Image (cartoon, rainbow, N blue to C red):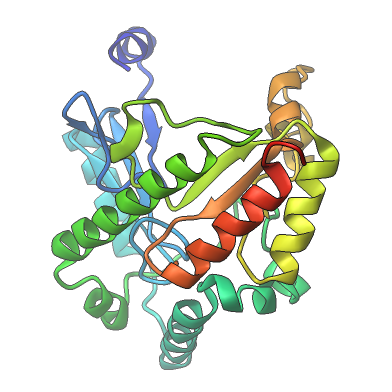
Length: 266
């Protein structure tokens, strides 16, 4: 990152750090989201810390902070109806994010789960009082969530260590507090079986990405480059839920299914 910033500053360009899903994480004692000139976190559903929707922008540059402050002042507030919709969505997220209930949102096409949507014209609002309430004591809540996720990541690493599958957590990565544990399965038949049976049993096991970045329609002009390795990963990756709503029963069923599909002799 330091080399990138030096290169960018030579051309007068700010470095924007996408730490959307990494709130609270760090590398070499430095907090992710604070490494560039500007960083941001997502507060949407399924992120490290959620207020239903929205995000956080960070910067240590006064000139950028001034422009951000001016832009934020022009944003409209949530209407009472929009706030009521937020409350309903918050309740539904808490219920439907549990693996045993995840079949329901997956069966609703309008939710577009798993799709990569490039929409530069999304609506923006100032944070509502309801969302501010959800964010109360955010540091303690975030650390509690991270602690549970770290335990679940360690569990998942131990489960897959003897299976015919690759994962991308380093050996010293037991401290990672992922929301979903990524696995790479080259065997297409086994991968499909895991996804189909996981869906049937309501375990929240999902494919990670529908395609590589160059496959996004709005980014077709990607300088003519093909992201072959990313495309291969998009068709081999699956993810296992390790967020705080995963219960002991869920973990037992996931463990059983992984061994059933990916164990030696299968």
